Length: 436
Ligand code: FRU
Image 1 (tube, helix red, strand yellow):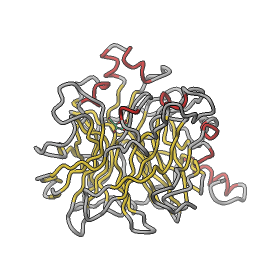
Image 2: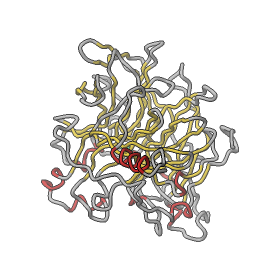
Image 3: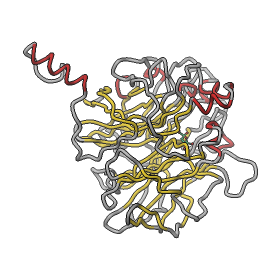
Image 4: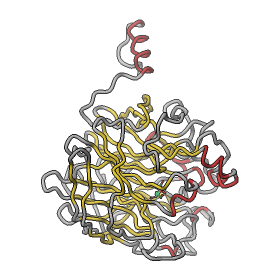
């Protein structure tokens, strides 16, 4: 156990040895996704999505509605261009199955950055305070898009419910943190592919009540360092899960702490880190891509995870390698940007429906397709929700729910078909349980 938040604490590591065992299995491979009858939003593509939560991490109940926030772009824009115009929109639902578009999240306020990438959203029912954390990508008024990123928050506004849900300003937009260059690489230090300092995720440690912000970063590996046993190419892949101290009562508070996990020599992007706490265990999840693994490692577009018995580690990769849920081999890019949350005895995972009917070796090849094919093969809508079983360091996919079905924690879910058959087989053979 490593309970020390700051100072000299060293991050847990995701090693090449862990990642060299990455392999699709029946437990970690999701079923093929087919397009839904209706997309989540008829006018916009959506991708990275998060639930509005209360400070303790539960799904917020806003006058009987639950709310999601998603990155969005008009659906007549070529999907590959969407990151350049990403805008936060929200959607609300009374049943967690059908979502009503609520419009843009920040109204007519002017968020930081030239566009806004992923974050998290917190509503405190006791005070009515709303904190909308986000990634400010680029500079506000830049004419040429830059890829600089910093963590930001919008606060001061409120939520109103009548026949629907409204986010009312005025919103104040504040910068929270920029990379310090020591624990977190600055853009100019980066020698890798896609530089990262983004995706702020608010989390309160249930064991201490302390507030933190997790985020995606990169660990500086100075020129001349030998971080990967003599392989200079590998050390350009230096993704990390960052953490900063936050404060429930002051949304602008943010003090950088050393990373929780780093994947130096393993992977460049440990995206959208978030924690699900279950019975004394901290499950830390990230999304990552096949093409961001360092040379010599074969990974997947997948949800990866780690577990520890304290927020600050020591984290061990789930299932030995870190792989929790991936796409099937014949649809390797069908979903991305997974987000996990606890639900009774299991963990539910939402994601977005990405490129389907597409099995070229890399997402980089999407641009080689004619524009009409790029549109046709892009989902841009919520994917089916995955149900994960979890037992210590082991996870397995139990089954799926419909596209965009996001139950709150009290909603009972039926036994999956696989489990029903296993139970019947077990009863027939005189065993009980699910055959596990
Ligand atoms: C993951 C991601 C996030 C980022 C967003 C930008 O899908 O790379 O890390 O905030 O996409 O669109």
